[in-house]
Length: 125
View (tube, rainbow, N blue to C red):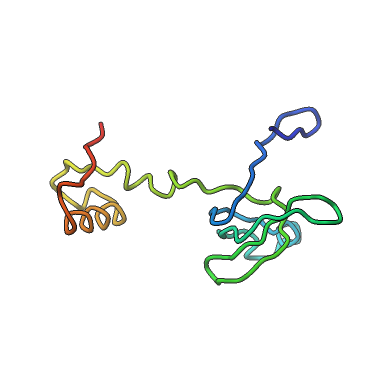
């Protein structure tokens, strides 16, 4: 389903579930020009408000381990796992210089080499 704004399609409506990583913007802080209005969080739960019937989310702000309750999903954006893992998934495994890899990709490779080198993924083009 796509939301409509003045007859124009905007962003796809997303259903959030426990454990999803999201980017949250506190609209009140944003419009008042206050700092720290946008941060990464993990969805703790999604629930339907009994009075309005609107779906709301409870979040845990990752940097401060702070609970933020009753968030309108319109102010959330899903952070897909593929984006977080892109540097590892595209690491140049055939490159002899580990410095050409991002630190995350090199750490992943070292861990898996230490465990069992027969389980390494096939090289990607």
